[in-house]
Length: 109
Image (tube, rainbow, N blue to C red; front, side, top):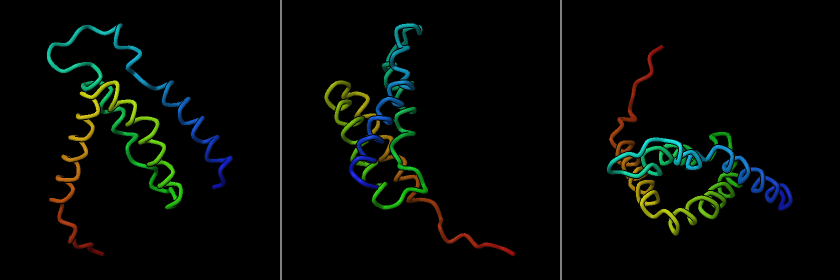
């Protein structure tokens, strides 16, 4: 992937994220008590984007992670720290749960 392709991919990705960002609908939904809409509704959607596609090469994976941190996480950390903290805690729970999985599963014929 050359620099031009990477820049075009970043632009397209930012456009797609802008189209599917459900936070734009927050004003139309009933108020929730306690946790904010950005955490309860947008958090899981953003969490789905945290991992690069499984078919990505190492270079693509590195570029994706860099883009995600720059385009998604950094703005959230500054503008919606509650959502950023939720995403960090979500990842911690995910890693913790994955560490409990028994990877020594026998495969039968």
